[in-house]
Image: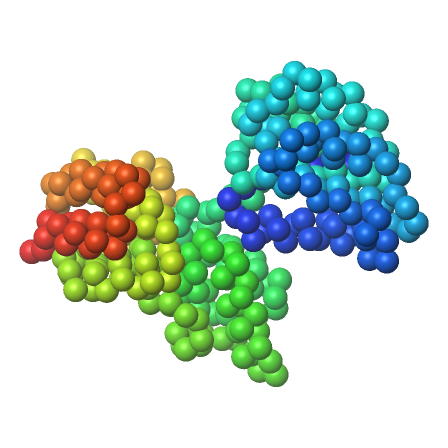
Length: 327
């Protein structure tokens, strides 16, 4: 049955999937008749969408009805649920009804359970910025799609530069594809340094600058990140995730654990081979310093959620964090 529910915070990938679906089913010559886009926050939006989806398409192609920012998987009245229950099984095969939202469906709702039965559900979640292996896999996948050949070091540098921003990743790979036109050679990290903006500035590097006690570099990175419109809370989320990984790694080592597989599992590191490199990063850092750092990170997150100025708050807390790790 052609009912779909797309959700997730990665708006770029979600939008791309919607575009692919729409172009697949709608004849461009009959678009004005067979395509309906309805704002999910409108009163009776779902009811209107169901009514439109029941209508057979005009002319060639099929009908496409899209409810953007749908709320039926977060709240759904009994009357609306009855309408869903009555209508979805009766939708003609020539109609494609799509619900989309950035919010995770509430699995406790009967409307969500009903959608799982009748709809194709796809998640478009952002990869956590500290899950570097998954970010690298994402780079490899999209680079292959765009037929851009990169060395392993170039892939790693590109993953560092764009993080989990799939829109930026796609744009940078398109730029690299143009650069490589007519050149069959695989692009190395020098091409990334030359062409990709912000390739030396990201939140993971900020974390490394902090544990190195390098206040000047850390403050510069804070400024660069905010000037690139990186959300302050996202920066903090990366810092917390990375510091947590380092802390668990140090804790397991302090307990005498030598098996990288065991350490990786405890620290939630997907690739045990990465443990070796993480060891080098925190070899001279004590567990005590990490314990002192966590309250500051908590204070930083709380201050930002209270609406305090991002630049001033980040700079102040980063200075204090660097002081903890200075030798």
